[in-house]
Amino acid sequence: MKTVYNFSAGPAILPKSVLEKAQSELVNYQNSGMSVMELSHRSSLFEAIIQEAEALLRELMNIPDNYKVLFLQGGASLQFTMIPLNLAQNKKALYVNTGSWSKKAISEAKKIDNVEVEVIASSEDKNFTYIPEIKKEDIPQDAAYVHITTNNTIEGTCFYELPDTGNVPLVADMSSNILSINYNVADFGLIYAGAQKNIGPAGLTVVIVREDLIGQTDVLSAMLDYDIQAKNDSLYNTPPTFAIYMAKLVFEWIKELGGVAQMEKLNTEKAQLLYNEIEQSALFSSPVAPDFRSINNIPFVTGSDELDKKFNAEAVNEGFENLKGHRSVGGMRASLYNAFPREGVEALVAFMKKFEAENGGNN
Image (cartoon, rainbow, N blue to C red; front, top):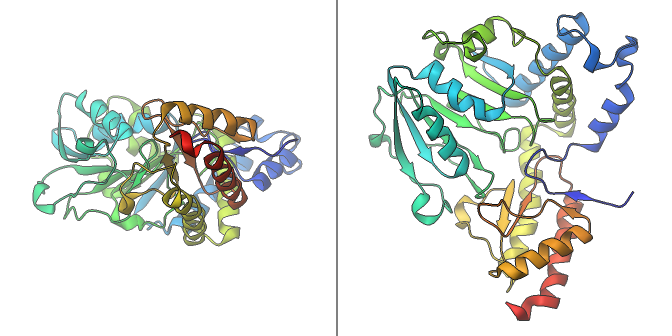
């Protein structure tokens, strides 16, 4: 099999050792004669899986005891609705607009009649190429929450310093940099993340929520109610059992490598290799302001749509998959999540040098 480097923004690369472990247990999990995909979610075998997954995540992220960990479905996109439904009915919800996913979260919250939505900061004026300043004095202290997207997968920006929101809970879509940057969970009221970037396969969503924020109000549907989900230990209905099992294996892998702090160190080193090449290049450039550049999603361009298309086509032939930028921004994007190997970045940099030598004069 030829070497392929998968730069996909999600579903993204998984650790090879995790895939091999899952393969070895696929048809006969712990001598049960059944696959994990066949286990009842009420069985002692699966209960051990989900309990261990939660315990590992709590250890990796140092999650305080007064936070619930939920394993849900519907992707981060369903959380755009669940969060205001559970936290902001008859209240004001504050949002920071830093790109495509923030805009979707804002749009969904506005659909709820008894939630007042206010955008308190935005970077749309410069095409989302920076993180806007969020001033404490602009945050009404009776608001339900302030919502941010910690890492903007499409635009390639990241919150490295969290805003001071006073007594207002900070809510974060952490889908593309959870377990990749060592945030302090206690700084947040709620964290949510789709699994398909740094946690496991698509189909699982992790929610980490402070206990005092749930059970505040009646929610139309039991499936959308954090309180009911928490009281049922994420087993109100059949959860995505295999995705939770895979997440457990990934959490074990991260722990073995040294935890989230080590992940952040390795990811920073990988990203710096690529950013250094972009900075010294006469052909490639980054559209993102340097102070806010993501270490997980790195967009870059040549300045020519024709050359961008040529680069993407040749990249595929060289075994670099999913480098094409998001359809809304074009160019290229390298997604360097926890499982992406350093040698893949080194190979990309070598290919960029070769491409520039052959095409630099055409820009």
